[in-house]
Amino acid sequence: MKSILFYVLAAAGEIGGCYAFWSWLRLGKSAWWLVPGTAALVTFALLLSQIETDAAGRAYAAYGGIYIATSLLWLWGVEGIRPDRWDLVGAVLCLAGMAVILFAPHRTA
Image (cartoon, rainbow, N blue to C red; front, side):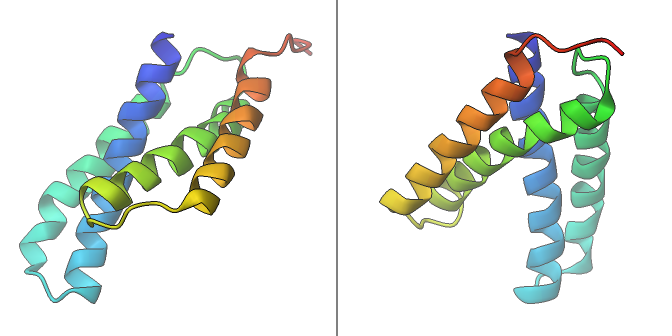
């Protein structure tokens, strides 16, 4: 369960950091948005490196499902756009894939 927390916090860091760049480039916000944005992206990388797995690629693959679900929460909570049923179906499919990757018994070599 600790991995899930790290995944969610990493996703929030990545989404927040990328949104800072989006805000600067696409919404005309001040370049000062890049300071917390860069810090958020560094936090994302540090958190994702804490995932308990033997292979970085597996951690990144499983992260994809959490990232997608967290992005939809960002869409709703920050941007004020409520995800539709297709967004939710897609997120459920991604989370199912993430669960298979993260919790299946894998060979070590």
